[in-house]
Amino acid sequence: MDDLSIIELYFARDEQAIKETDNKYGKLRHSIAYNILNNNEDSEECVNDTYIGVWNAIPPTRPNNFMAFLCKITRNISLKRIEAMARQKRSQATIVSLDELAEILPDESIGENISNDNLTELISDFLRKEKADIRNVFIRKYYFFDSVGDIAKRYDFTEDKVKSMLYHTRKKLKDYLIKEGVEI
Amino acid sequence: MKTPRISDAIGNLPEDLVNGAVTYKRTSKKKSFIK
Image (cartoon, one colour):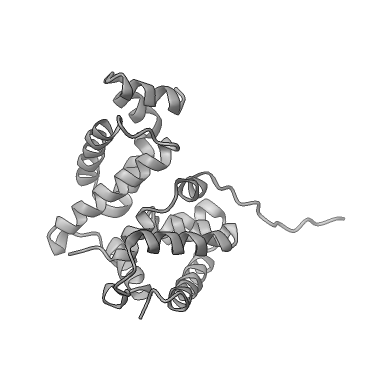
């Protein structure tokens, strides 16, 4: 079923919407949750929570891009869950990725007048200026939390190449944010 | 634990960028050998 028809089912409050969403995007959502949580049971619960989130959001929201909308909700719910987890249960890979992000821009270094929307806009502008390979590798790592191995396989790079691309992009983004006056 | 603000900002990236990373197919530059 196409995305517009699924969205119409949500607007009609037809529970078939959830089944159709699961058929089409269940695997993608589970992979995002699993990347972040590294645990099948927690990932399954998170995916179930996202169904409630989507059911409550549509209507009134009418997403322009349904897949990206689902990815965002799944990412947010999975990260909220990892925040609430006991330290020893948290996925080490996700913690490393979050630490790498914090190294680019520590919260305490963000200028007072910089909102999260400003930050998103600047990062988007930065990524749009990068080559497609570099941009997508970065998004796969820090939006989807894919492992280096999975990114290498997906885009036919060696793992060392992916690590090197990520290292240089983090450094370049840090310099860009300093230049733009975000990091003080 | 609190996720860093930069992660929240990345979580709000525009839909076309997120979608692009899902659908992007890299065209490998494999060498061709002509005999």
